[in-house]
Image (cartoon, rainbow, N blue to C red; front, top):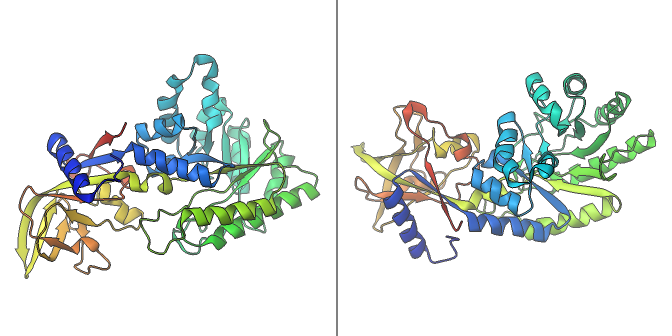
Length: 401
């Protein structure tokens, strides 16, 4: 169900799924996922995709991307083992060590118990401070390490620069210290912030990385991959989903600018990787819900649906997105407020009738049992959903498998 068909046909398919599976139901379009991956690779052919598992850790999404040639960016032991669990049995036993070469543990701060568990796999991981370097040396000395540098996150929906990244004052000293401790620093990484709309963040990151590579070499240390001998440059994620923001630079234009800047700064032995998450999965998933209650208060209708902020609408809290609920039926639209199913007043899917800020504040008159749907819910929704109040997480259904 790659929704290149009419809206009417799409709605018929969604209603059929909801009738067969019940609601809330999370419809994952595997064909759209494949299209997104191919679009990324076609426009950035020299960049290996390390899918950011945190965006959506659905097992079939992981397997599909692996089958297409992707690697994986993980940020926790559960994510690390999720990739392992889903992929390890796909390879003959003599090739299973290959799995660990397909993963970068890209969280700069790791628990000691995590390092102990990762040690046997000789993982590739990031760091951005002296204490973390000492911790890795003591508890996971076999690791390959990548230095994460700080770059501006101006114009990004989620700012990560305040939390991670070595500053200009520390970056070179950190790289030198790592070499002196016996590590081989294999590369550099940066992240421009989630849903980045400002190309200058990428430009700043690339130029800063070029400076660090050059300064380290001047001090007698060559940053390089232990297996390939090439410098790793991880340009992170942040590639925006165009469905979320009007006026976002088309990916093709962004890729063209990135390719030109990379060619200018790194004409030699560079191994490029990136960590797209949202870009690959945002538009692959559609949520269908049911109206389970209705009330009239102060001249405005309140609808209660069987999914909310503690479920897949959690992206409105943690990912700063607003998802527009649409009706399957027509009719004159009227102001409404939409609540999730829990007993918590915070669980308000459309806490305002301001249409510009909360697009789901206007709907035709709904009846109990009527269905609603929301597009572009593939990233940071199901990933942060809970079963608060005992309400189960929306069931996933796959189309175009």
